[in-house]
Image 1 (spheres, rainbow, N blue to C red):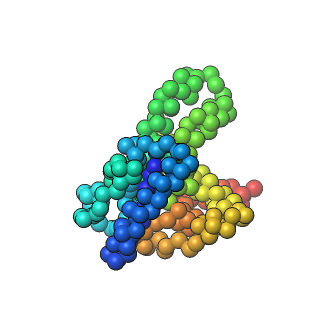
Image 2 (spheres, rainbow, N blue to C red):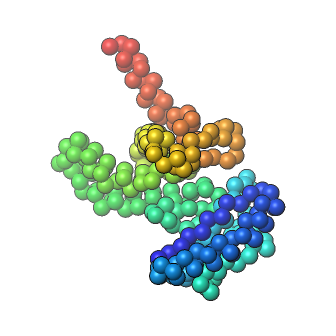
Image 3 (cartoon, helix red, strand yellow):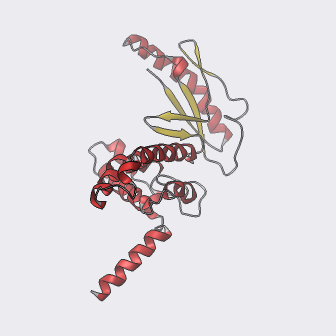
Length: 233
């Protein structure tokens, strides 16, 4: 069993000191709970990340004087990014590493299906579209509500695969996710997703930001063209 520790860092040093003062005790209690219920944990495969919102990019994995963490007498290393449940989390929540990995996987599957998706393929466009939706788009949009709010420049790497509507698809998927979560019977889940995102001019972006972002240029152009066609019908 692997353990991931995520630390939300604040710009206020007093809060940061308080977090790291209580964290070792919390980890020790967690280790005792694992022993009590005979849950095997491999600390060597565990990691800790300090999530930090900041305009400035730092080459340091964590801030100076950050204490080492240990569980079951084994050191838990601090890392800049970590893959968790198929999503690569980075310390600044930019998701650039995740998008790069997803793009690479999508290109791999596209190449594997090249014979069926290529121009010389005898498959109909409808079957090609179905193949794309099942085998390729699912790779790119897996857990998309988590990273759909990433900077448009980063998401454009997925759109560059001649898939101009990928941003709209992820935005719609995010809206469905938040709509379902807001009506969930668990009050903690409702509270976690029911918040006001920062304004677009703020340097911090949260997942709900994708719901208020304007459509990308191509999607806006397609919608405009559809409106014109509906007018003439």
